[in-house]
Image 1: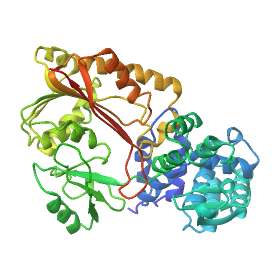
Image 2 (image 1 turned 30 degrees about the vertical axis):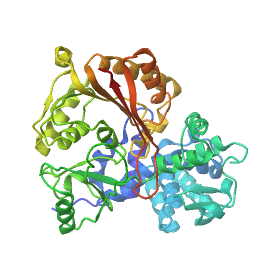
Image 3 (image 1 turned 45 degrees about the vertical axis):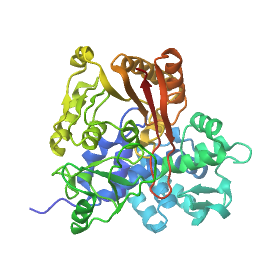
Length: 465
């Protein structure tokens, strides 16, 4: 029996986007369900993520050259157009005629002649007004150039963007498809140039980093294992003053499905961003400590603590989301970690009888430091939702304070770079709890340079004896 013909990556990407609502669901489950329709799985994935990551900029182009508001365009046709515009702007190697022709053919299968003609007309207008598909960003007209990388952009012959000199927040918001209120918050906290770098870091294609499991292998051995499987990696160079031993980490080059990487099934590594690894390193867990990970799922930091203490500390891991604790158990089993005891949140309440040497509190947050990975967040986070998260963070920090012994410490960490969730929460806590003092604080901003990384915040709060 002949195999069913494979659908193109562009057509699958359009189908995914047609079913996706940025404010209501994650794109992952939809993408995973439809990827089986194409042999070009990585390309389809890149088109979906690229379109969502740059959606506001893409829609500015569609609105300009279609003469219609986005809301007035048929949802199915809009998905086809968005994928086409994404490829024309952000994949300058793709031939324009191929992008346009395939979009037209995809539209034919779902609409009539009029709809097909509309898709054709919009995309040809876009092609006609692109002056150069890849230019030096520094030398280009800012209101006519959509950012591709920190060095390059796609130049048009028409103004598409707000004036960066008169309204930098609006300019960065459209250029990087980020909420304007969020950009304004960054501008107030970090200034223009640093905010621009945060935007690049938030829109990068994030590298994959793996943390070597020292209980089972070494960085040299794992790198050799990857090399024999044809996977190119680079050792991460640590240059910091964290008190504990450095974690061995490798940067994986090129797109790879993590579960298929050599050594994954044997538990030789854990995927973790280099910024996320800082929290445990600054906590510096010791082998004789009793430690609570209060928001543990999926277990990455609990396992990191076990690895740094050679699996000899007594670690309790819990999470209010009971179903996610199964992920912790699965990861512990895969990595061969035995010093972590996974308990329910209710059972954890009974652990108060014996205070902990340390509490790791990786709180639920806005995720504004990890927008490159959690691309939908930019369309969901609002000032109101941020305020709700802050209330949750305050409550969790107050709870952690009741669980740590005199002389112990709390590691408060987020993957947010918002002061309201970081320094303000910690400062308010210290003001109300004089028995604690700030031992260490660190804010890492998203970066697209060198060993690119996400954003993260860590505060080590020491309880006085």
